[in-house]
Amino acid sequence: MKEEVLHRWRHSHAFGQDRKRPGESRTFLVIALTATMMVVEIAAGIAFGSMALLADGLHMASHAVALGINAFAYVYARKHAHNARYSFGTGKVNTLGGYTGAILLAVFAAMMAWESVIRLVEPVPIAFNQAIFVAVLGLVVNGASVFILGADHSHDHDHGGDHQAHHHHHDHNLKSAYLHVLADALTSLLAIFALLIGKYVGAVWMDPLMGIVGAVLVARWSVGLLRSTSAVLLDEQAPDHSQREIIEIIEGAGEHRVVDLHLWTVGPGISSAVVSIVSRSPQKPDYYKGLLIERLRLHHLSVEVHPYEEH
Figure (cartoon, rainbow, N blue to C red):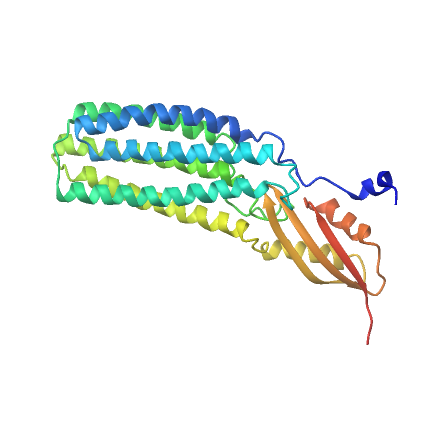
């Protein structure tokens, strides 16, 4: 067979992953902001004796590392998008970056809680004025980072009417980075609150207590991100409404029945499907592909057709 003829049936598995994603440049910018503020807060937390401030600085340090992983995932996925070793492209590198970030969030939450408990048992004197100033500065930087990463951040919702084949459509890598800086902003806010209470009411124990509260909230975000990313990494089947949509499109076009369906996510906004059809009047696979691609955003769609036989 001639190669030029066979070429029409061959296609790339990059699925757009070779293009620079919007979150990549913003992530690098936030890394620079976070790393700078991290140094200031850790130094101030040690110098002024504030556990909430030190926890915020350590949190920023950990998030700088996590954001670095997110940045690496963007670059790696883009550079290796055409590598034939990856059966469905490098889309899941993005999700793997988000999954790793979620694990780091959980680790950092545990570290925050542990350090806060130690300070509850063994309190240390706090230089409130200096600590409050640095905490406010940290909140400003964190707020800017949240704005940068959240400008068009896609939240983890299931949009049933947008004809998206799978609800895991967002950029998990960007969501991981977004949650890290959001956690930083939260711990900065809690630090300010705790320091103000400690200064004007004398309740020094509020400082480590806010560290524990922040740790609990960060842990909850971690669990949510772990659930959404692990579902993609494990090729979890798409939600029922997405499967029903495919079945209705095929079976609504005549005496065709979908007898087997696999629908899963292979990257941000990238869903693949394998559909097995039994029909009394079977058509060529391209006919069914045309029906689906006209309505749904599907990549690497495979269709097998079997003629219906009574016996």
